[in-house]
Amino acid sequence: MKVERKCKIVSKEQMGDAIYMTLECGDMVRTSFKAPGQFVHVKCGEGLLLRRPISVCSCQEDEPQDLLTIVFEVRGEGTQWLANRPVGHSLDVLGLAGNGFTMKPEGRYLLVGGGIGIPPMLGCAQYTSGKSTAILGGRSQDKIILTNCFEDECAKVLVATDDGSMGHHGFVDALVRQELSENNNYDAVLACGPKPMLRNVAKVAEEFGVPCQVSMEERMGCGVGACLVCACDMADGSRKHVCKDGPVFDSKEVDWNA
Image (cartoon, rainbow, N blue to C red; front, side):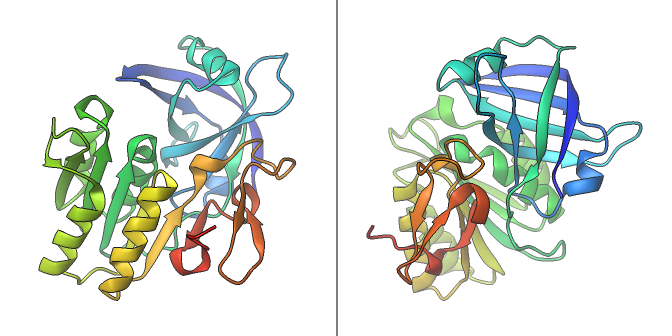
């Protein structure tokens, strides 16, 4: 059950175009954590009616207050306001919200993150304590963030960039294919990023017979189901809201041709 808490910013760091922010969040993790891949609703200033949904990079139970980290890029007035908040400022946060990835701590997963979809995969890596492999992708080297954190939490980390400035020159699905052809002994492929990336990753996973879960969080608008921005077409002909029904879905549920 999500809860509303005043959360103090205890650290803040610029990572390329992204802001890395750690919050003290009371008992939020103890009360509402279900699985890696959830998000929070952040109230961004007095003049903006709707909260901004932001994915959780990582979170942990702690004393006297739980801690959670969010990583976001400035995409509009709300996130600009949030990026300008100083350390020590308190935010009005509602969470943890949404349905995360279906995982088991003893499992072994192939984690795929693209662009601002990289941060949520770090929580998945931490959840499996060094057994998983991470594949990180972005347009260029400056878009590949948190690499050191993934190296600390994963058995292996692979990188792909569109321009070849870091790692494999190309898209992440080529590395997913490479990894699964060498070793497909994974419980599942878990992915977060732009929809074209997710579609390609899901296709490769299906070819190798490995279950795949995708986080469609990039498409969230209001975060509470009040708008239609995040309505997602399903393979069975239904439509689901990413913010309420997801953001994580089994890749076979999604109509990739819609």
